[in-house]
Image 1 (cartoon, rainbow, N blue to C red):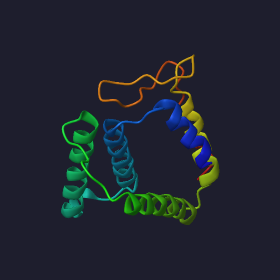
Image 2: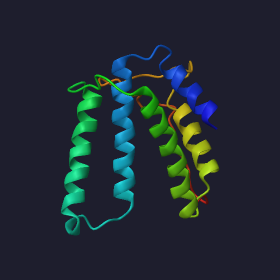
Image 3: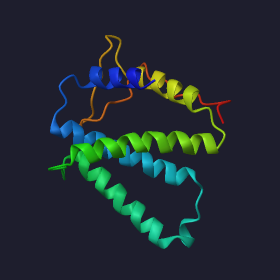
Length: 144
């Protein structure tokens, strides 16, 4: 499963730059914010949470636009954190009685459909991969 996702990213960015890393971190934060929205929380009762999400959203936007950058990192700690995030994300899906294997495969297939007819990505002005004319939204029906 991870091999096919890695292949997609290597096709998208064969020689990733520091700018690509910033955009990808921004996209990763964006997905966390989407999860928070999907939880159906009553934002009015969680002012502190709403503020935290707003701050993360602003940081994500700045990373994707190039207004801010990640200047240094502890690579070992980052790798550990990323692996833990994958494990805990699967755990959330399992606890919510979701078919994570099928969902990840479907989302990855959808991501491949972003590539043009020659099999390559097209990017927006911020370096994020655009949803081209071949794009199809993932169909997750029956997986939850």
